[in-house]
Length: 600
Image 1 (cartoon, rainbow, N blue to C red):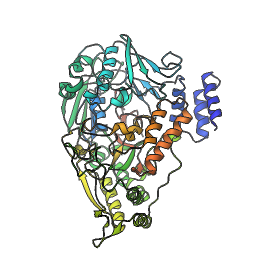
Image 2 (cartoon, rainbow, N blue to C red; image 1 turned 90 degrees about the vertical axis):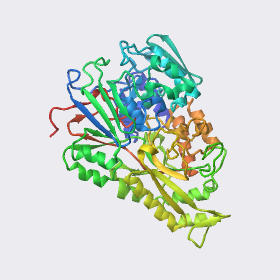
Image 3 (cartoon, rainbow, N blue to C red; image 1 turned 30 degrees about the horizontal axis):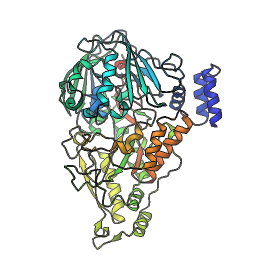
Image 4 (tube, helix red, strand yellow; image 1 turned 60 degrees about the vertical axis):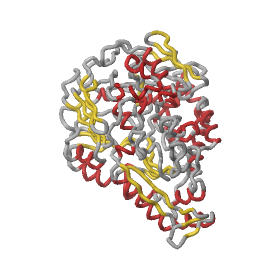
């Protein structure tokens, strides 16, 4: 489909000549998935049909206990400080955004009365402002009313550099004004094609002004409610043990009728992915388990227990290896991997190219991940219109050796390549997880054959993904040469996902290691493209910019994509869960319920 044809089709939808369903089916005939259609229409300011609720219970409560298992336990419950998915999900039990993403990439109103569109006056013609209308009669768990003042405060709180919020990138370049008690205007300095970032999804959860106002800025980490949330969500806080257990009880004043169904909720942390899968699929001890990074053959075997099912939901998550462009072994002003240093070896493009050639992705998919991890060369894999066709994965020990030999890295008596007194010895770390340790072993074996010595380091997941910035092993510090983990894409648009490589997002001591550019890679073309994409209203041109950004980081071997990971979860056969590959597992927690009898 040409750009002109696409624009004509969008206009036909706007004029009512073509239905949304016809639009989706037409795009599907060109190999474009439903989330892409939703995004194109959203960017064009065309109202979208709301996904009908699957909720069946006719009264609030009575469902007993909901027991969920996150093998990486939440470490804090302030969404603006979340350093990983487990903190975002723990916070989402209690806090809510204005809107969330469903599985088709549609915005669904949560605390908003409706999704802004051009038709309802919520989206300005110039793309520079959005008006959100808030639900009325919503109350915080302590009984205080939720109003536009809370929304404005969250902007002020997150945008303040002294707060050191992980969400600062979503709020620092906007202005938010309360029009009245239940209406806010979000203003952008320039046209914003992807305006649905502030106050949306996991980066948009709203905390109460009256409890956090005294802790904005430098005192942000001192707020008692960082660990004792008071939100608007379907469950009220009971207790929290960091890394172990989050407990909530039913919010009997929740703003949606007949919700929630369950009387209590537990989010248990710790253990490992295999035991989590077993606890749902085989023993039935838990109702739901998150992020099952487990060998597929094990999942298939556990499902025969008959207690639960594996749910595989496509999304944009990626398991990848990142290389450190700074020196992790030299301390500057009390900081290793300082932006003031350069890595003594990994700044050599030949070394990174060779390492990329030593990742046997097809074997990793075939023998470890199966359905749950698809070999890929790209960092961005979904939605498909943002996926590059320029990259391929190649595994070749011979070619890697040739690349190193040509660059002057010679094999020494100890079998390790060296050059100018520097040896190709690296520390390669990841979290404790069976598929990751097997992946490490595959990479190490190939590296040995070409004269690279990899020291494998494993860190307990609760430490590796911790918000404890005093710990040297947290992944945001990258106090080693290379590391591997999954980064999640929580929106059906790559704008936030791709800020992981802009130069102003370096993870440093100054920002409490909350910056998203953990490998501290810098590329001027990438920075310029990112800034341009932030204001490009033409969806086709904008997609081309993100494809080029993907190619820059992939082809420079700043990172190596390993497998594209759909969301893999396990649930009890009787548990009804609205799934989404673009948001928190708990994005529609208020709609979870247990059916009367298991399906046939």
